[in-house]
Image (tube, rainbow, N blue to C red; front, side, top):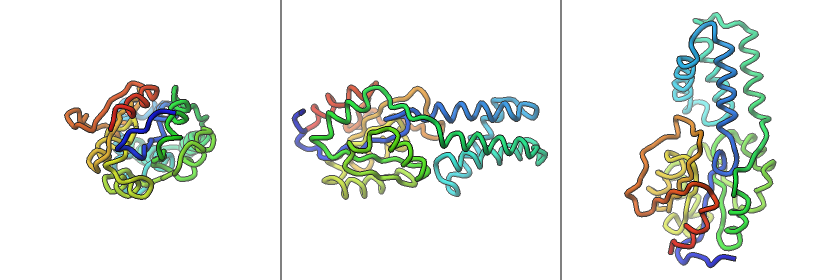
Length: 236
């Protein structure tokens, strides 16, 4: 069991593309979507219009598969000027439904790192998206038992981290957030007073990009989760 850092009590972990694969399934579904509408627009144009629809719809539908599916339908209606065949709509709905059943593939070092840290720190899973889908993925991952708390939230903001780490830790100043999204996992957590450990993933949703807070003293960058325990040991 590793020695506990003196000023760190809780560590938050993002789920999708931090602990297990997720975005790759969205990309495969997007390819399926662009193929269905190939007679109406180029794939790049369809992808651009889809991301704009997702951006518009975030406040109404939130994050996750349901909002993504509705954005695909909306984009299909737009690019066909309302002439999209019902059979295509049906296939888009099927594609969205298939996303709800994709297999859970933990990323390298995920379980070993959680097991190494769970005895000394309060580990909190902090994830956003469809409630049922996030619960399904956590259950299938087999990692749930390693967490002291699970928080499925509508969005990740400064207030989110202040609330969660005050509830499950000793406050943001003595907490760390680990994730692959600069916009959701790292920047707001650091602004709340946490340490932020960025673990890049090869595929990250366009709407999760942000500037790297490289100059912030509480920012850290690792290439994979196996490097996290060493970072934790150095803090404090």
